[in-house]
Length: 294
Image 1 (cartoon, rainbow, N blue to C red):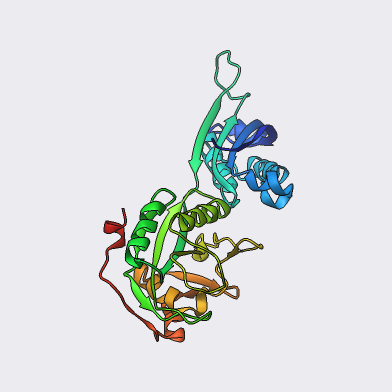
Image 2: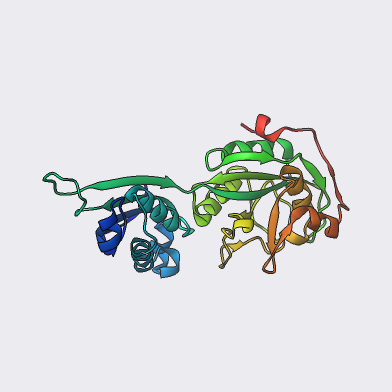
């Protein structure tokens, strides 16, 4: 069952329509917005930061109604949906635009256009393991992630030296690139559940583990849609990804055009690899994760 926030009857005067007098004189438009949002965190925390500020959403809708004149309310509905989906917690939205004063020429009570849009946000996830059968564990993790993501690309598997923490064996690492409709918070919880399903036990920081899944980036920094977030549970983009060869090397392998925001600047991952170097990162077992992981 999905949680939802509904805003009904947001009204403002706009100048949308194909006829000259509609663009000249304007008329009232009424908009309903229904957002699919994971409300479990807000229910626990009672904190506005864990939900969607519907007053701000209403303000965005009014701004679009009163803004650029469009010929079709279909276009207005699409723009409103796109604007609502820029809020990271909104996973899907249904927008209905009513045009009760439309020049239909016959008796009627309402004309309405209804559009539904799902979030399709690019994400980057790093996978690591150095306990048990790491190849099988990583394959199982990729198979589980198919339920949360539409996976687009995967790196080869790399063997990497451990960084920090106690003395331990080498890791197998990979990076996955895909899209998701989940919010960052819901995706993080899904990844943590997959870790638990694969025997992850959190005993010490940077210690050995059966499975480690890290959300490296959510959104696209090139288009300024990447989420920048710093909470106790999640920091985006990952604060140390830019200095970790075991993340950068497989990421560049999965996506040669990948970019990452570093200290406010959008950098190519391939350039970061050249700066950090490839020491301690070598090709591991020959595994096709997209073929073998499902």
